[in-house]
Image 1: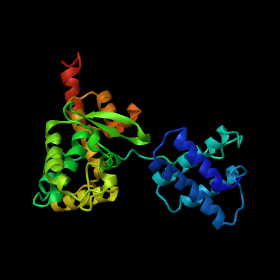
Image 2: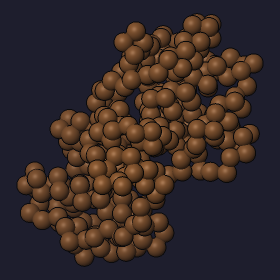
Image 3: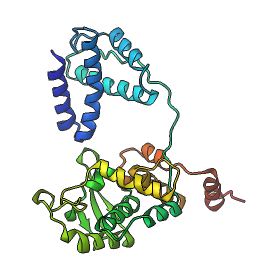
Image 4: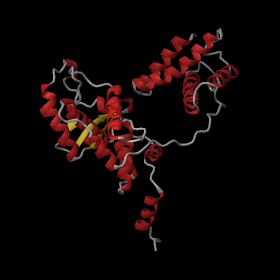
Length: 299
């Protein structure tokens, strides 16, 4: 059994059986392809069924010299998943990474924007250009609904249920969820949709896509990152800000104002509450306030 056909089988399994998104499948595949390239570079002709624990360890030790611990951990995880699949399908009897531990990582929490910083960023948008109204609607939706960047670029007009106060979001693994949307966010989307977008030269394939570029096509992930980066520079904010920062700020601000963690989990589309807890770190001052307000032994 050769590597590329086996990798293709694994990709089909991830897509059909696991229901994972194309982006996730691509990331998993890149980890396996790194191992394939390393074997070829070292002239090792070994099939995925015969590769030993020792050989995989040599690869991990070698790659650890050039990548950060977080990347090393991700590669180990990706390879474990691949070989677990081969064991599950009874192509192998053991996983060569079964006893291999990932490097210990500190929990790195992303930066959070304050409400004032979010207002400052949005105030830097030049509304004299048509793209300004679009960009304001994008940022308001990222923050107002806690969306991932992939979710914002794929948001459809047919996903907007403003009368009911919800939008339909297609998240990881093509899983759909309904997320509440506030009046302010609805207002800015409607301004863009009804006053700006209607004048765009819309391509047929993008007729239902909400946010468009100047040529009438859907936006890319890179374009959203660029829009935010330019606004951060204009505002003079010295934080590592990305589209994900708005999602993290959405969750953190909700929790700080007393929202239920389970409700935040549903809105973010997390399968595990543990993932939500990572997004919603809060300072000790807020924790103290919660104890004084809600605990029966507060006095």
